[in-house]
Length: 189
Image (tube, rainbow, N blue to C red; front, side, top):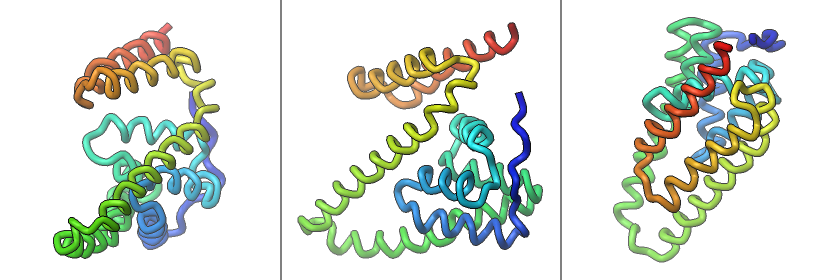
């Protein structure tokens, strides 16, 4: 099932670059929540369903989900040049910031304030991921798996990682493959 096109589009490659630079700077450690709000609600470049569809593809590709998402959005509007513009926007400023922070961290890593700040950032990032998941939950109604089955797979994956201490690649290969196979089967019938 194809969604109707989103009502807006980026004006140029520069618009893509600056939008994804802005996303990257806003969402340090949790870009997904910011990306959904910016691309779907504010810019209206994608519908919520299109966002979830592209994010799903981005999750099975190697690399960071939102980086994959940026490249797919750039490609959708301006081809390879758009993909590269969005990618550059997503990575340039975070790279500069991470290099600066790494040099500072190497000097102050044992300071209790630095350790506390890192724990706090981890909690904030987890909260952003959870908030985005809750916001996108209504899109499961149109999923081939349905709400109950999708939540079942999510619970199984969470338990496998947290209780079973499975490596993430086992979870993706096992539970992820099973969910994809079931969705494919349901879509074919």
